[in-house]
Length: 66
Image (cartoon, rainbow, N blue to C red; front, side, top):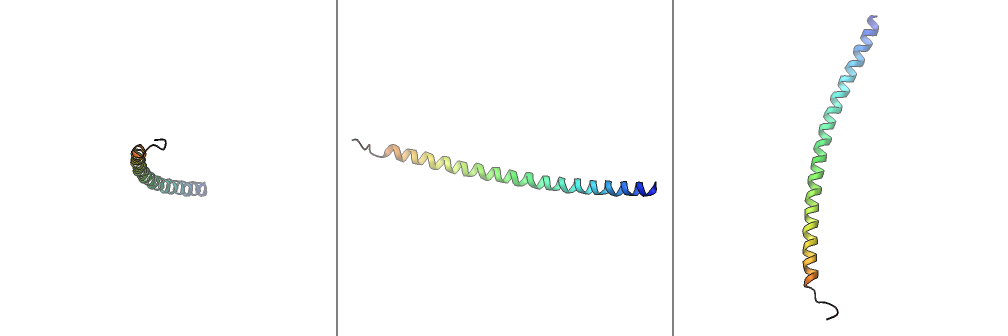
């Protein structure tokens, strides 16, 4: 009976340690995701700005049929 309790205690300890590691990894991954989403928004803003500038330049080009 004592051996079974010791085995159970060891397994519970391992489970708690694994849970703690996964929690820390989850926190880290959430931070990485937030950073990546922020960078993505920044890049999309730059693309939108470049697109608007190109559209303005295209409007200013003379018409080929004129």
